[in-house]
Length: 231
Image 1 (cartoon, rainbow, N blue to C red):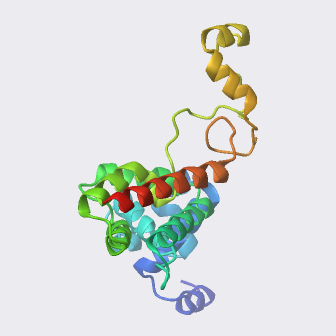
Image 2: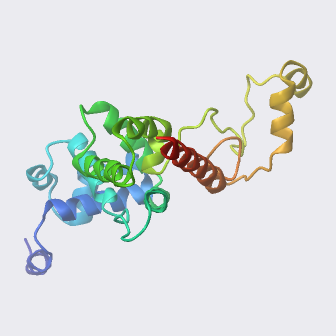
């Protein structure tokens, strides 16, 4: 090691799991999950790849740790607000976090399915959200139903009924001609022709992503509020 390299090495803070995960998140933000490799992370941190394995055993453990880092970006529950306002604010905060890290929803979904339980930070978030409902007067059974209804929306993203092919620049080779589509499925065609499309959207058929998310969220919360009043 040269004298210059030795000085640079001493000037860097010691490697920690926190630094490793922050570097991994930054790489994923820049190039997606495909950009993640122990070699790339080590290069970004100025260490040898083997040094990383002292903090994470494998890529799955790395991804779990990255999810937990992101969950810490979600705003904590606000004081002195009702359950509905608190849930709405936290869900939209979670959504804001995911919009800053577009790769995260797929990782959260895949790692949650691969584990026997979500990561610790996701568990803490969900436990906190359940606590908000319970403090708002929800019986346990209604909370159970609420979690099923909200699904992934509770974490800030939604799984849509149709995959969006609009704006890809590539026509669907299996798509039927518009005239046949209108004849077979008049109501779907009518709806598709009537709605406004946003070419930058990632939800639905080019629909306004944020509007549709908040519309469904508010509709769900309004319905839960009505059900709570009947309990």
